[in-house]
Image 1 (cartoon, rainbow, N blue to C red):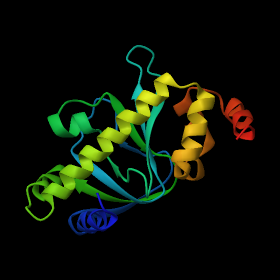
Image 2: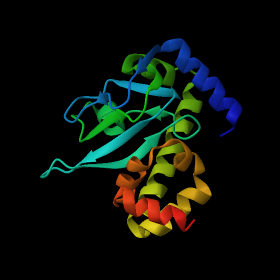
Image 3: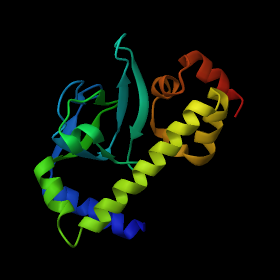
Image 4: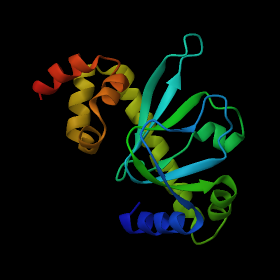
Amino acid sequence: MTNKKLDILFEEFEKIGTAIKLQSHKTLIDLNEIANKMFFVKKGGAVLYHIHPKTGEERAINFFIPGYHPVATIAESFAYGKPSKYRLATFTNSELIEISKEAATSLRNNPEFGEIFQNYGIMTLLEKNELRAMLISLSSEEMLHYLHANLPQIIQQVPSKYIANFLGITPQWLSKLKHSL
């Protein structure tokens, strides 16, 4: 998908959504909430947490930042109207465009934007699946090298404590691994 098509889609998000500014650590969609909105990240970023069903422990499983998956929601809940098994929150002060489910559905059904929107969704889903497959098959050091080589924007824009949580290691261990890069 070309950047020009994505730019057109993202411009449309700004037209149909509402600009909001949020501080760090603000929950956008909570555990057990039905996601009826999505967010386009203009500045800052958000983190998607998986919530362990027994312990309640949160584990970062995806990041949403400008230039890398800037459209954030909890897809299963958004698409099927089911209570969320995840939590979506800002990890820094952020500027977002909040888009209602109704506006997103209308956009998806629009002949001018529907195909671009659908292709973007499929592309990001495939990228997320690849990233999660690598996360479970690579060591934390190998995964950090992968992020550094292939997704440097995550290393540059996401605070280390969230990257450490994503990798399943302590921030101190992440610091030691970063020195090996």
